[in-house]
Image (cartoon, rainbow, N blue to C red; front, side, top):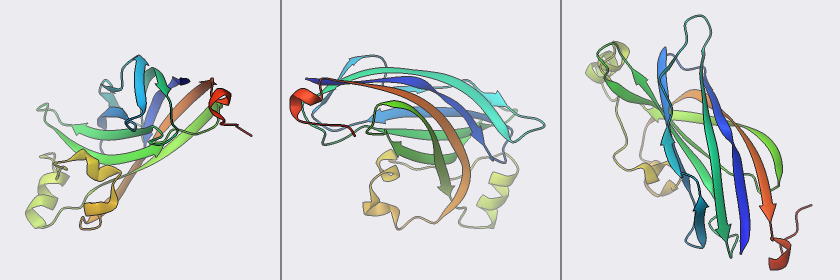
Length: 177
């Protein structure tokens, strides 16, 4: 079977209004893909920024996958959460990116969005640290079936660095140019 090694890190979140953030991540792929080694989901520590609009996570990724088909190519999903002094957390950004289909080093910026407040009360609650609206199903992140019904706002970006190693794809007739 062909293999993909994903080695890298979720570096940081930039341009978010909230000062205390953490990131949940997961790697989604099609049915032909199998996990050989590593973790396909995780969570970073809480990172704070005071003077700059950047929260550094440096969350390592080390995933080894095998596949017999390029269908269902992997994608990295991120959910950024804010935390207040009462240790309450709420989502402030959702986003995803497909893992690049070429070997080598890649620096990716994942643009994120959040569910827009639908009234004055929810807007005030979000502004003063009580939390914002959350998605009940995370598959809305990458499938456009129901996402068009949501009202959303842009939030910050998540910066990811990935080093990709591909093995045995030539045996399955896949060439990278």
